[in-house]
Image (cartoon, rainbow, N blue to C red):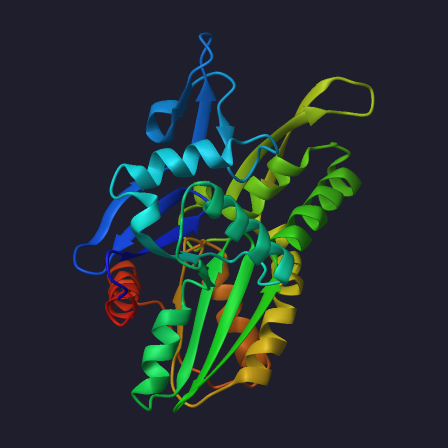
Length: 298
């Protein structure tokens, strides 16, 4: 750690932004929300939730990025004295790195910003300890893979969310004659396909039929199973390409999607991949610990 700076990790996920400290672990988290009140003053995080006109980081093009992150980071430690590592599934293209670096530079960050995948600290630690295996982080309709060998980490990323949203929307329009919007289609793939009771395997969608009449249709998981399998086929091919001896461990906010685990197991078996699939019961604690360990080494 450089003199007069303190390392933090900023974890970006769809439902939360979390700040992690090397010594204390998770120190603060908030939903990435903002609301402008009638007096022209912004409220952020949980204070903005449920307010009319509330904006989200993922869904609002005019979300006040600078204001939100300044409010969030300064609650804990001065930005100018932070050594910040941004953990996100954002593309690691130079443009994305440049934009994030510019944003936090405007907020006063003086040390170079690091941009990493949320599973990268864990993958590097496993490789350094001469372990082999694979890590899979699922969030925001994106899957990031880390193939691990002693002293070597290979990262790869594929999407599934956009394909599913588009395919389900087309399916409902063609089969049920019900035009639905993209958010409704996205909600469908996030909720359906589980192994629970009947109520967890069906969803009522509402929209207007071709004549403009408000109409409801019941969507059941069974009719979407071919779409689920097709959506993760690129992920199966990537697992095959990166396959390492040892377990395939699942992390991330969408690791426990109700439809994902059974479909993933089925497709791995069909592809004759014998990788043991593990959903660690304490995956949040494991992920946080790996990030803390990485921060301690800065």
